[in-house]
Image (tube, rainbow, N blue to C red):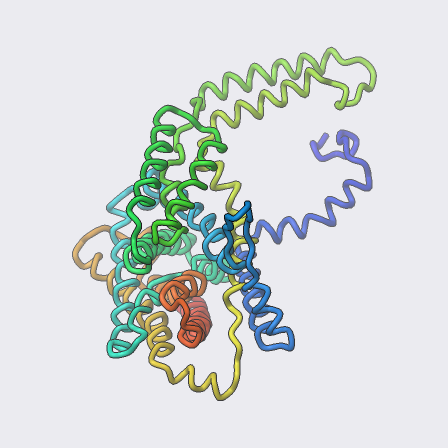
Amino acid sequence: MSEDDPSRSEQTRLERKFERALSPFQEFVNDQTTSSKLLIICTVAALFLANSPYADAYRELFETPVGLVYGDHTFGLTLRDWINDGLMTLFFFLLGLEIKREMLVGELQDMRRSLPVIFAALGGMLIPALIFVAFNHNTEFLHGWGIPMATDTAFAVGILAMLGGRIPAATITFLTALAIIDDIGAILVIAAFYSQSISFPHLIAAAVVIGALVQCNILGIRSPTVYLAGGILVWAAIMGSGIHPTVAGILVAATIPARPKRKPRWFLRRTEQLVSRFRELEQRKTGGQPMLGEAEQHAVIESVQDAAAKTATPLRTWEHVLDRPVSLFVMPVFALANAGIPIDTQAFEALLSSPLTHGVIAGLVLGKALGIPLFAWLALRLNLGRLPEGINLNHIIGIGLLGGMGFTMSIFIAGLGFPGMPEAMLAAKTGILVASLLAGIGGYLWLRLRG
């Protein structure tokens, strides 16, 4: 008899019907293209609101001060700043967990396999920045050179997912590893070049807390509460230091334990004992006693859950817990708050003639398309590693085109590069949106026809 046989299930007929009705939504949430779809929806919504009768209300909403007041002390930021400086820290924390995992057991662990990816990522940062500088070397916009260095992983991977079996699965792995290295570069650029005047007392305070979290890791402390509390303190200290507070997410992620409390063999022995105990209790049952009344069986189930938690690594567990909230909430909300560009025909023409816009578009579209495959080819010519199985330079060219979808990270860096310069921000965002559209279409068509 099947495990899914209704006669062996505790579900009611109504529950089973509801579950079948809900499953398409669950599949949608689990689909790896969902994040990209939500980003597109929120971007379109932001553009609509910024160019509708609700434009003033849209702008005022995200400029609303939000904070805490205690006596004469006030701590507050605008709603947009809470999103950009607060929520985005979760994105960087998740990114830090992914980077640490990749360095310990992933694509970045084996230098022979990772060198072409590293070279490709370096080319995808260096060439776009140089192209931007070429367009803006004698302008007030030179400080935006970091904008075209970024790649939006969600959008790029979403495009690859749409191609399905037309491309090797390793293409997604290569792009993800490249985007991680790209993000490391972006983080270093933000920390070094897009920070305000540095407050060393705040930096020392942050270093002390990070040191304490490292010590907690060494001592085997795995409580999420400890790292959450320490993370908040690091975020506050980094914010006061003049370095952008999202860097705190990366720093705290590096302290998260990557070792389980118990070994897999212990888990096997423990679960075998618990399953035997559960079977014994089940055989003792008489009549139709519902599960709700079986306190001992519930205790066994809770013990299995406890054993599983002790055998899983905190790093992978927290990565799994944060993945969907970040991709399905944090990133779309960021797009909704930052992608609203008021479009006026004459103003739009002026924006497209700006060297800032030209530099962003050329840097993202041409710079990534040239830099990524060129440097990957250079690594291969120098015999520095090899490409993953099934991938050739045609796929790398497609990845280079998709790398021009800077979107989230590019908008983020633009906000750091041009504070208090709304016209420059508007020009940068226009360039980012146009470049992301061109890069996405170009990468999709190239891989569909040549991949």
